[in-house]
Image: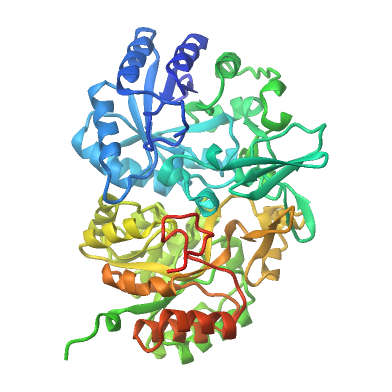
Length: 328
Length: 304
């Protein structure tokens, strides 16, 4: 193995795609404008025509394009998902990122030459699961859920033949992906069904004296004093009360950043690093991709390069999450 | 004599999701064996492999349940991360000749492929293609994910070829699982030094918003709904769409009485509103919900 690891970057819009390609991405990932992908936000994603143009732009520059079709197809109406896979095959997308077994089965049988990646939304957290997906659907790469430590990743890589990709920077989901219905419990919309978590349509703000409360579907997720940076009310990043204590019970508003452990992860056999953030600004994408390009290149040569990115963190904080065992 | 449709319906006691003491678990299952009008009983640890350490009640419990005529199904872990988790799950699958094993992770399905098995609600089966795929691998009983609406349940029931479908109709709903132990975290500990603090809260530890609205409970690595799912009023619709297996998720309340209420309601001996009235008035005081079924936020209670 020990190929140079790939840097996989978010393209929420055609403009972001061009920026990520120029800033040094090896691959960009993106979705269509509907519920077939896990960033189904208004104003994001690609029409079929934009996708075709994006593929041309990326391929002319030697950059791969990965299409995320990583929500679960709806019973009784799987057409949008099937259509997305058909588009991927037609437009010569480099790989489709899937989570749903029904869709994996369809893609594998219908387009045997289409490269399949297993989405983080499938939460394949052990070697036996990964080998199952590899054997059944010829999945070539697995994006690992954010629940594993570096040692666990290394142990998994010793027992599998396919590539592994890990989340490197951005959103810090503390739950096993694809197994969380907290958002639909509160708002009716979930990552699995609708490609959305804690949807903006359900967010409200309420000023209470000097404090600003952030709410999701009427439930108070957090509140902030005037001097505090106001965070988005993602359900699992709120301040709640349990055991007579108030605090960030699940996770604080923080960003995942694995730059400090890139060499360890490469040593653990990781083939690709994914930057999260299809919903982020162009300036953010440019900065994060450029910095990670340098850091991944350095790590591939055995050097540890750490570039400060404090201004890009949610809540001004970062974490390596479950990659270090003491997080859990 | 032609049976009424409801009489085909089977009740099950789902796997115990909480960390009760060995004595409490034993007493619970013995009472279920002796008194509860249920057909299936799921046993086994679903949430955290650490909890199984030093607990040896399972053979006694299984024997007692089987003697009482219950069919025992062994449920596996819902998140398998390390060797301890994998070993526990593999040990379960080695019992597949004698018991139906309920897989809650794809790795378990891989181990059971080609043998008859059950699939739990933690495997994402959202559509017909996934359902039929798993049926072809040998799934005979499938307990469906909790966030599915009636629309999806109906489509899946129509598509099922060789499996019985089950829906949870009572109890708090598992909403998420993590590598991080929130029970430990709420007690200033972490998972590796957890001191098994999840055994302090028999029905989970309530999570309130800062303005005092309870909305979740934590149960070790698992996060659950604060409300108790109650689909008593939806049983008729569910049986009409061809779903005949109903799961009651165990809580630290009189599960025998609750089983009786659901059984009587299925058999048409009492109405759903009578049964829910008794449930609320007599058994325990809880907030109920049925939102997921009605395509609404899961915490909502839709009156029908």
